[in-house]
Image 1 (cartoon, one colour):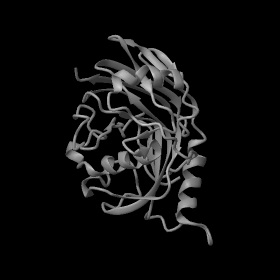
Image 2: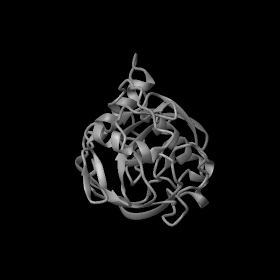
Image 3: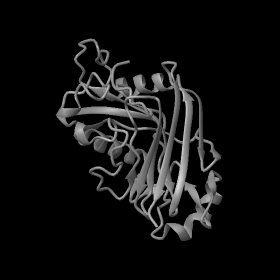
Image 4: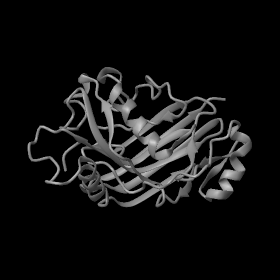
Length: 258
C-alpha cells in the first residue's frame, strides 16, 4: 500500500472502493428543516432529538445540489489538498474547519496525524454536511517505480483494487450521532479516477509519500455520511480498528449556526 494514511480515515495512497451505485433522484430540499421527518423515515438512521428536530443521514444514493455523494467525496479531497500546510485543518487540530470552504456542502476535515482525536467545527446553517468516517485515497504517480498498473491493467482499476483491498481490512466500524447508532454498511463510496492538485507545502507534512505538490490522479474509497443538521450542537463518534491495527476513535462536535 502506497499513499496517505489520513488519520480520520483518509489514507492517501489507496483509495477507490465499492459503491458506484446509480444515484436516485433524491435531492436536498430547499428547506432542510421541513423535509427532515420524511427523509428520516426513508433512511431509518436517525440521530437523537435536538431542539425539536433530528439530525438526518441522507440515503447513500441521494443527490445533493445535483451531485451524488460519491461525486462530493472527490470534491472533499480537492479541498483537502488545496489548503496550505500552515492553515490546514488536516494538520492543525485547532484550525477553523471552514478554511477555504466555498462549496454548497460543508466538508468536515480529518486530522491526518493521529487515529484518535476530538475536533469541534462551526457549521453554517442549512448546509448539508459531508462527514468522512474512515476513508483513503490511492494516488498516482508515486516515487516508487514498482507502484504502477500491471501490463494491460488500467490506472483506475489498479488504484481502485488497492484501495478496496486495503480498506477491506477495516474492522468493527461503529458510529453514533448524538448517542444514536448509525448503520454504515450501505455508506461506503468508491470514486472513479479523478484529478486533484496538491499545494506544495503539504508535501512531507501529510503522511502520503506519493504527493508531488502538483496535479495528480487518484481514487478514493471509504465510509462517508451526508448529513442534514438542524441548528445546535451535534456529537458524532467514530470507532473502528484500522487495517494496519491501530484503534480509531474520532469525536466531532458540530455546532450548527442558529
